[in-house]
Image (tube, each protein chain N blue to C red):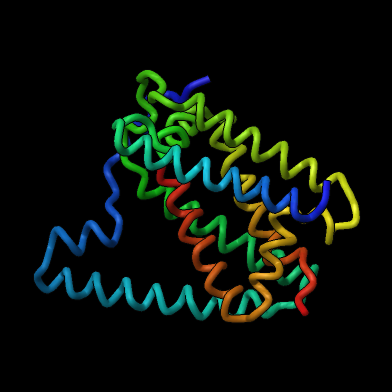
Length: 152
Length: 67
């Protein structure tokens, strides 16, 4: 099932980066300042959100709302015409096989115990994200990726 | 399957992904991003990817025991 053609009729929304590049004058400076303020806000939010108590409703709301907001921004910036027809890119089957293999390997590890002997991707990342700074940085990357995904 | 075998499996998959990405750029064939963009033209795939990303964030940043 494909998208309908409505996406192709929407006006083009440009990202902050594109606006800054297109207008190096006064409005560009204002856009740069706005981008810096948004970046600082996101960093502060990330620092606060990853300090919330694990398994709490507050942490769930902070993470899910931030991800949904980033996706909404990405969808708003989405270039028109991305849902138009066209053939599959060469090599897509190889990427599909690799993704499925990775998923099967992860599932095989998840279904076995103990976790120390059968680590999953998340158990490995938990070790890496043990510090507050690393968690906040990973949260920012996750938000940026959410926006980038929704722009596709 | 021991810890070492599991880790070697992840490493092999990661190296395969890097090799595939390099080969895709040299041959000008589809990158992972191209494949993802193609898949996300379809509403169910788009919903699955975005919902899966939200779940991943919840799993990594909420459902976890920090030391």
